[in-house]
Length: 446
Image (cartoon, rainbow, N blue to C red; front, top):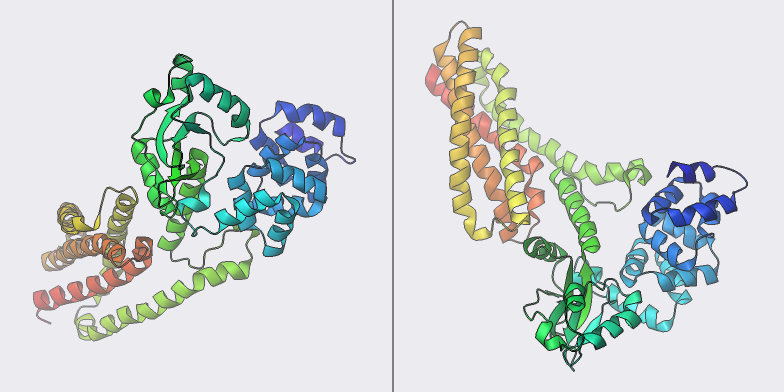
C-alpha cells in the first residue's frame, strides 16, 4: 500500500503507474490509500478504476470520503458506481450521508433500484431488514442440479454470495437451502428437492440485529436468509454484514458503560471537541451531583472521624475496591447476556455465584489487608479487623449489585450497558461508607 500512497502524493498524478498498480492490489488496500490521500487526488485516482472495481473499492471507503467522492464525481460516474454497488452497501451509504446527498444519489439510479433502497430504508433501525441485501440466488425445488447450476451462472454474478442458494416455492416461501459444494458433488439430473436442507435457520425482517448476531454465532453461519411474517424470502444477511453489526454493537455498549450518551457515528478524530464534550457532560454532571450523597454520608459520621481520624485513610481503598468489584461483575454479566449465556430467569443463580466469588475474593483481600494494617499501624488488631471486615462486606454487596442491575435493566427493557460502571460505582461508594463507619462505631464504641 505504501507504493500507492507515494504515487498519490505526486502532482500531477501519474495515471499510467496507478492504472498498472490498481489491478494488483486488494480493494481494501486501495480504499485505505484513497482515504488517506487528499480529496482532489482521491477523486482523480478513483476515476481511473473501472466501474466494477470502483464499486468494490467504494464499499470499503469511510463514509466521509464516500460523500466527498459522490459530490466530486459527475452524474454518469455516480450512476455507474451505484448501479454496481451491492444493494446493502448502497443502503448503508444513504443512511450515513445527509438527506440531500442521499436524494441526489437515488435520483441517479434506476427507479427499480431506488424503490428497492427506499423499501429497505423503511425497516426499523437495527433490525435484520435494515442490514440485509435482496441480492440472493433463488432456486425452485422442481429444478435439477443442471438447472440450478445454469441459474447460478446467469444470475449469480450480481448476487451477494453463491455459496448458499435458497429454495422457494411458488409463493416465494422459504422451504430449503443448498450449498454450491453440494451442487458440484451431485449428479446433474438429481432434483434439488432431494438435496436441499429443509432445516434452515432464518431471521424475520423485524428481528433485532443483535439477536440475529447471536444466531450467527450459535449456528456458525456465513449467511442467513431473512423472511417476512408470511415466511417469504425477502433477503439475506452475510457474515461481513454481521461483523459490521458486532463492531457497532460493541462500540455502543463500551461507550454506554463509560457513561457516554448521544453517541456519534463519526470517527473520533473527525468529531468536534464540543460534540465530544456534549456526549460526555451529562453523565459527569449526574455523577458529580450523586457524589454529594457520598459527602453527606461522610458528614453524618463526622463524630467518628473526629475520635479516630485514621479512618479517613481507608476510605479511598474501600470505595475503589468496591467500585472495581462491582464493575467486574457488571462486565461479566453484560457479556453473558450479550452471548445468550445469561437470561433474566437466571438472576438468583447469578447472584449466588457472584456472592461466592465475592466471599473468596473478600477472604484473600481481607487477610492481605489485615496483615498490612497490623504491621503499619502499631499492630492495631481492632483497626485491621474493622477495615478487613468492611472490605469483605463491601465486595459481597458490590458484586451482588453489579450482577443484579444489568439483569433488572433487561427486565424493564433498558439497555444493560447503562447499568455499568458509573451507576454501580455511585451505589457501591455509598454502601462502602455506611458499612465501614457502622462497623467502626461498634468496634471502637464511638
